[in-house]
Length: 296
Length: 264
Ligand SMILES: Nc1ncnc2c1ncn2[C@@H]1O[C@H](COP(=O)(O)OP(=O)(O)O)[C@@H](O)[C@H]1O
Ligand SMILES: [Mg+2]
Image (cartoon, rainbow over all chains, first blue to last red; front, side, top):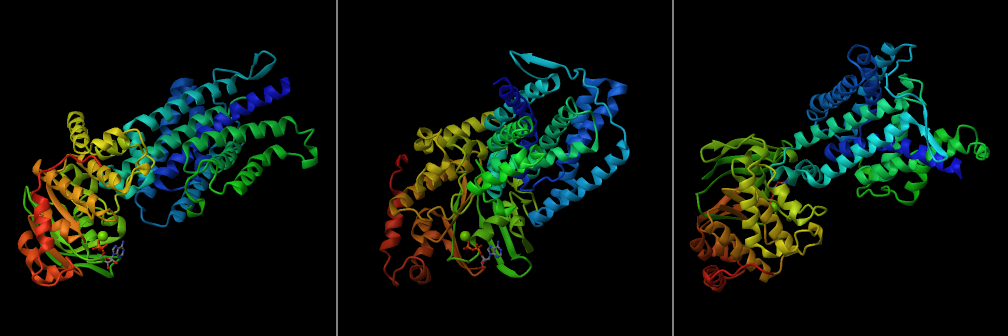
């Protein structure tokens, strides 16, 4: 029973990180109808920047700078590419982000080399125990931070002018424009927020139990994709649910791998995709999605 | 005053939607633009409201000015800020937003909180039913209520000139009559109106001036009541032979009727 609860808690904390990434996908998609395939690089860029600045300016300033710098990259991509090319087929714009991703990944990989950079988290890899169940300090803080950010996000999305503008634009961009809503600004803000959330997720992903900043972090975004898709790519609530489902499924599959050996070793790595496929077979537009995903 | 001069608009460089039209909306007036499907009515409004780009449309020649300032090539949000707001064809309510959020979206172009709250009071006064339904999703309203919401949403920006694209589309005759009354009331409160319609009876009933669009050109124009009497308009838009002017009389009668608050 304790094993189960431990896995559940670890799954939730991993899911919270996935949810941060998936929320970014969802709002970027809602605001600009573009799927950001460059989130892997954004995660890595965020973590890398924090690790590089950490020595000179200390962890918390480095953290803030890393998040801002990553948000800046999101803004640049939106302004220089997505916004300029509005009217181009959406599939082209999405594929364009793959190009940006490859360029950023190549450069970051070159800079990191064979090092394992340390992001310098002031918290270590100690286990926190609550009753008989436990998780690393890093994951605990990840869960708390993600919970706070997600709560802030949903409050803003529901109540703020930004949220109303965002939802109106997602539903009908032309009519939103007729109401005086600046579509470019809505889209730019979505990219800023999506990229900033990715940097926060990146920071926690390179903490314990992961050894540090390596290009391998990039691959995590590929696991957050199924989270966003299975929730319904245009749904923020879906991104949250999808993140949690994938996180828990992955933690369970790794934790019970002895019992799941008949499925082959490393089943934990493919479980996000298996879950996504199962959900999409039943609900083609995802758990909470409204639009057909075929338009992506 | 809105002035459109010799306006030519094409889509995708090929389709000629407007072939040189000239018209004016004087301050404080209701001006109707009549025309059948494909005449170019919506294109005219898109050009004025700055959303032509979203449809790959382009102004080939001509000018659109409001209060002396050119609107051509301006961003839609700046045109709204300048006091010209369009209610789109088919209402286009944000169906997943509540009534209140729809109105908020309508006021998004301005930062003036006091003006927005005054505008909201005005909208709820004009359309008490919207106040009753403020927490309901827009998509759950009836067609008539959605049209009220679409108009109310546009009023949130405090327009000097309101552009209406076929507000009677798909509505029952009784509701159309109420729309006509509401347009008069909005106009009485000081907003000029450019009313695009296929329903000539309603439009000529509320308008001071009218223009008839025919495949991208103005074919007739003048005083709305005068125009309603002409043979061409009678035949083409009012569905009567020459000399039979009961529809016009009815329209005139409706427009002078005292206004009742819209409660449907
Ligand atoms: N987005 C568009 N792309 C290409 N052609 C269009 C577009 N919208 C309208 N048109 C064409 O422009 C002409 C005028 O259309 P429109 O302005 O919608 O007329 P109306 O509103 O009077 O029915 C029509 O021939 C129509 O086919
Ligand atoms: Mg039309």
